[in-house]
Image 1: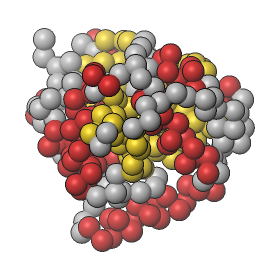
Image 2: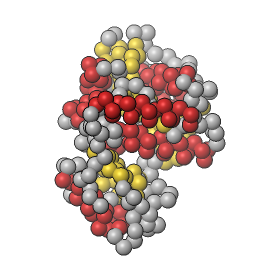
Image 3: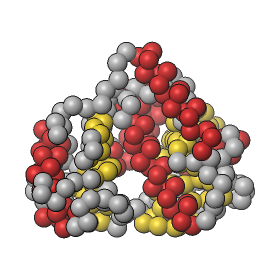
Amino acid sequence: MQLGSADRRGTRMPRLRSLRLYWEGKMSEVLLDLSIPALVTAIKGNLFEYYRYLGRSIQAEFYESPYLTWLLTGILHPFLNNIIRTQLAPDNVDDLIEETLTHFRSKNMTQLSWWAEQGSQPLDLAEHLLAHGLIYTEGGPGMAADLLALNEDITTPVDLTIERVIDSSTLQKWVDVCVLGFDLFGSERASFDLFAGLDFDLPLRSYMGCLKGEPVATAQLFLGAGVAGIYCVSTVEEARRRGIGATIVLAALREARDLGYRAGILHSTTMGYSVYRRLGFQELCKMNHFYWSGPG
């Protein structure tokens, strides 16, 4: 396995065409089964498809082999640097784990999440990850909502507007707010390049909330695994607790519903949990994973 051989796209026009074909192939897979097992599968499946989609950006390094699949974005946050899939043989599992971590170190990445979902190999993968210094963590709640039963009675400021990010100019404003909301200072350029390297429309749409014309909130909608996933929800500190976060999430979910989607999913932080519950989301699982913070 050669970790440097990332999955790259060529010129811009063929890459954008592949993005459109990717989206067109997903529209027929809308999930109508709202049972808990189906939704739990979709909560995680949407996330992993989101990572694969980000891997199509020229800014990202996406690697896939029979043994490992991972995403490296250059943004210093474990949510955006992940080992998504692990299928290792017992006789070389430790060598490949160390080789993977060494590659991330070589890219100055010191934070990553390693997912060890059911079906990962070897069966004692957790023990090997712990031995290499990773820490098991109970992730945030995985939540889902029926888009036909949302609570849409949300009070919001009358001078709030929601707009879609449709070009590089609005993307730069979106990134500035997102970096501020998530304390990702130092990752501004990498964040812009990551999303600028993708199309500005489906399956990924980004939204910006403006208060009196000033950008104050962000959210993303990603359509994958048959459901509408919500990502990158942030509100600058001075505009919080005014219903802005709920409003921008609701705007994205309404668009997904208009496109024929029935279920919405997200992965909640502690701060956003009560907001999502108010909209109608229910906690169905935990997004458990292993966390690595590099040397020391």
